Image (cartoon, rainbow, N blue to C red; front, side, top):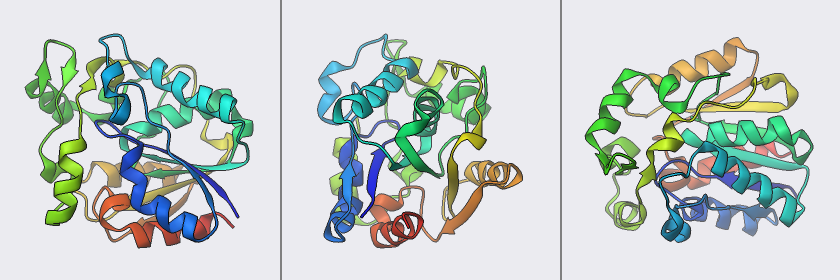
Length: 232
């Protein structure tokens, strides 16, 4: 039996992992999916000063108070910034980390810096009150099945601009832990492929899924099988 901890990306919440959680628990694994401040069921806590440091504290506090160790830590999209920073400070909590098309941080760079000019324009067009970023078009998430869309879209919430613009704290060292990059081949653009190429260049374990960028929603069986294979 393995213990999995999932950290969601921007606009979502721990709810996004529900399908994969169910499969893993049916296979007798232990699963946790904490929700970041201002997201999901904690959306009422969203404030202008919520940023990357807030999210690092969220997940760091989760590990401390839940007292879980030796986990397989799974990130997606934006949350690569969060999980990487937590493991820099608390390397003992995880034995493996998987980046599902998640950002690989660099010292002194924000998520927006790493994502590039294209995303900057998208954020500008979705910015409200100079600090709230509205979720972008559902097409960007690769969610096409009507039932999935009906479940997924209403649960997306605004995200704080500061989370996108906070620089990664300290120097990221990907050699400190066993790491795997999972590239979803059917994403809307090539940005995540470039990140996967970087991971391979750095000597990371690398694999691919025939899915869109949110396999926890669109390909849960395939993702769960991959996660269990990495949990051995």
